[in-house]
Image (cartoon, rainbow, N blue to C red; front, side):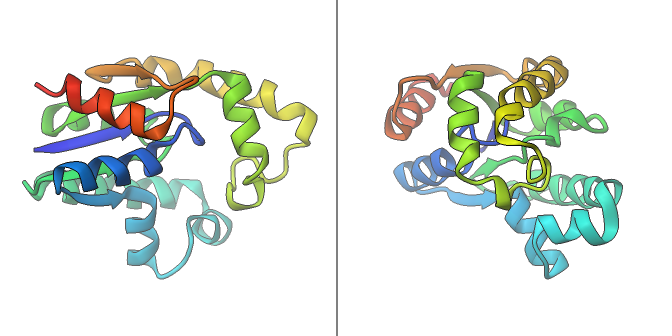
Length: 170
């Protein structure tokens, strides 16, 4: 069984996926880290040197490879992964998908602390970040909403969200 966590950057996908994988003794895979390892450079460097289109192609290939593995794993997707190609279709066909929903203020608060590590927001002025997130979320929500399950994360610890996912699993 593969459990896929999706949502906007800063929604807690990686942290919650790690927790969840430990609880159920599944392999943990962070899609961005998987791509970085294959390319021997960070996602930010891939965006910078080869562009977003190259990254999205790498992301699709990695996604197909991981989903075809048949392993018991928890997969933390990149924030943009669901919005490209027919990625949501293959995610839903090959895994149980959870959309981790967080509010714009919560996302902005988390992302302000990690801007330099996030190529998409690194050059956005702090006061403009909430508006950028809101606009981006609006564009991505049609894809995120295709997840099989949605979990509201506001006001919940990562531990509580992981438990909620466990309790929701079929």
